[in-house]
Image 1 (spheres, rainbow, N blue to C red):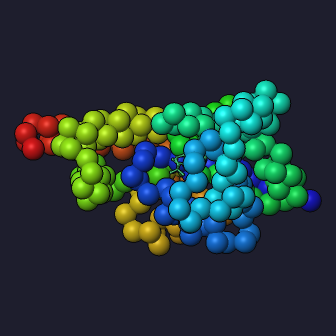
Image 2: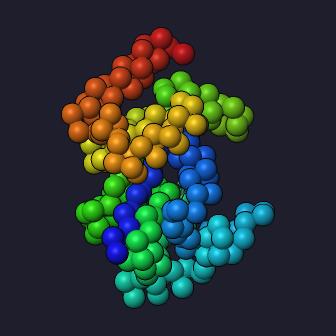
Length: 212
Ligand code: 5GP
């Protein structure tokens, strides 16, 4: 039996990786990984479906037992991908999709070089800023800081295998399917990263010099 492949979908926050993955998670041909987290469940979240909600002590025990494929600390909480279920799905021939933040994505590649890393890009920084401003909870200063962080994160694009612009959701999902089918040549990062990063930098410079 052929071994399944591991696809990791990541990118800056606000780029929309979650929305893309929500669609992919409904496709039964993909194996689903349920992460473990120390953060408290939000309303409507179900144990074993959205996450396994555990204490810091349980999380640390899992680290000590080498039970994670990767894990990361985000906003004072820990998130990790349990290794065993993923390895079992891959061995059973299932392709698995992980939706994780960027530090974890890069760590997966270190311990599992065959993993295919997909970077979800916003169509522009203006769209990212618009999404943040739309929440109405963030000050101008916070938005500027978040944009700067996103720009730095986009700078890590060369560590990924493929990029997907999240302009239109259907198009973005179709692009991920093309990559999974091995037809994602047009979305390979190699040879294109500098131009993409430069485009976002120029947009940011224009924004700053515009004094807005
Ligand atoms: P949230 O708390 O909103 O559910 O998730 C916060 C962030 O943690 C998101 O960017 C999500 O992709 C990421 N995340 C969820 N599970 C994992 C995981 O197992 N490992 C890593 N590294 N990040 C995760």
